[in-house]
Length: 92
Image (cartoon, rainbow, N blue to C red; front, top):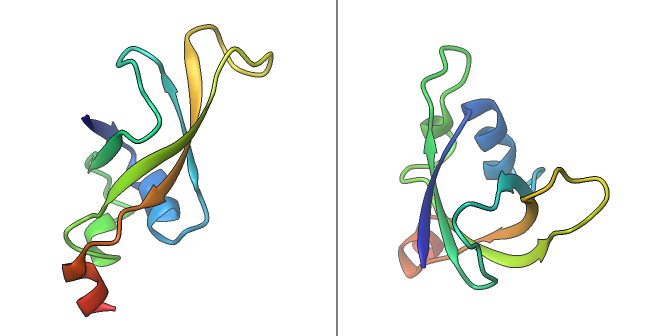
């Protein structure tokens, strides 16, 4: 399953740089390990996620933390990694 999630560009830039390898979200989409995420950057005059990489890569959900005392009810923390496509390998 592919989830398209809107995200502030300041957070997306940290994901693209590899510093942020997780995403906290309300679990209103029945996220599953193995699902893919495509982030859709929200307008932000201070950031330009597309200057990091274009197109923005898809990410794979590797682990889901739920029912944890540090998370609000019905929220999950998703461990994510970029999906490396043949096209992206050639660009690197």
